[in-house]
Each structure stands twice: as C-alpha cells, then as structure tokens.
Length: 108
Image (tube, rainbow, N blue to C red; front, side):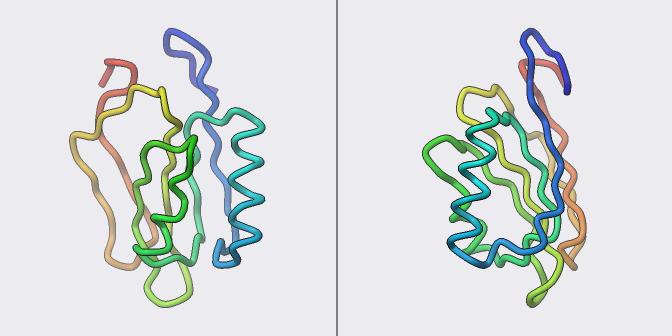
C-alpha cells in the first residue's frame, strides 16, 4: 500500500482472462468491495473495445494495452476520486506491459 496524504489501496493481479462477463462483473465487484483505488491487471485477454467494459460506476480511468489475439493484455484501473493525471504512457506492441508516468495526488 502507498500512503500519499491518505491511505491508497493499490493491487496487482494476474486475472487470467476477463472475457467472461460474469467473471468480469464479479471481479470488479470484489475490487470495489475491498475499496481498491488502483488496480494493475495482467493477462486480461481483452481487446481495446472489451477493456472499455472495465469502466464502471466506481472506475473513472482505464488505461490499457490490449492483447494480440486471446493472450496477454494489461490494464490499470483508477477509482473515481483518486487524483491521477497521466503525462506519458509507454507500452509494447504485444500487450505485455504498460507504464504510466504522471501525477498522483499532485506528486510526480
């Protein structure tokens, strides 16, 4: 957990595919129930269009590097109310990693 002004819950999770709408809904509900502020997801197996479905009533920002076919894919979800602004996004063409450079709670 990172502490910046207040406690911030940050998780990283290998989700092993979020193609199933039931699994996606259950997973997002669990993140919300645990009050996760930032979730870094690996192996989403989603394309760009499907990644947009990760944006829910409590997720304000979704950053993604989609999978090539039905493997790989990563995403970073940011909860509403978390002050995060991206300056630059780095990613590989195969959907294996995503790096964000920016400001969190006003700090770079």
